[in-house]
Image (tube, rainbow, N blue to C red; front, side, top):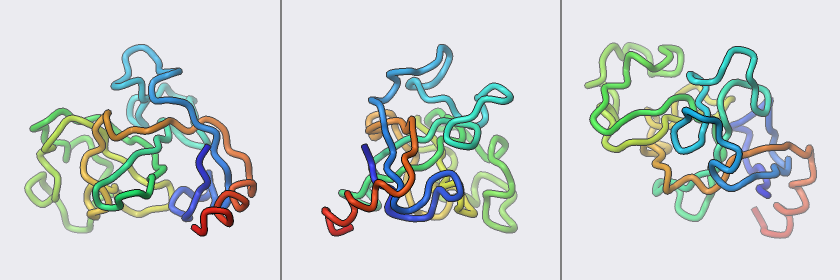
Length: 157
């Protein structure tokens, strides 16, 4: 279980919610990368915690020791120019090519992620490198509102 520490996933997860998680790919669908269904790859009408795409818990070298819980938007291969797959609304204003993005082409195979409440992909605002399968700790399954406040209080977060 993971307690949500920030508002980056609002309105689908709020600070203080407790999230029940499973090991990565435990319930993965066929044809998914590392068992993770991305927002771009999810069938129409398919929802995970309020929106398309699996919500993953992962570690980032940018925030050591702090797990990040964000939505997987799409999968990229090492060397891939992913600019064309990106939603322009989640890119910085005025960016019109891969060369203007920090992690494009993709330096490694993995996922481009975003907090539901955030304006930009994590990989374009410096929050996280491309999320590789080995950095995925869990997949979010169920939200229990407010119960995470207990865990946050006990850990001082």
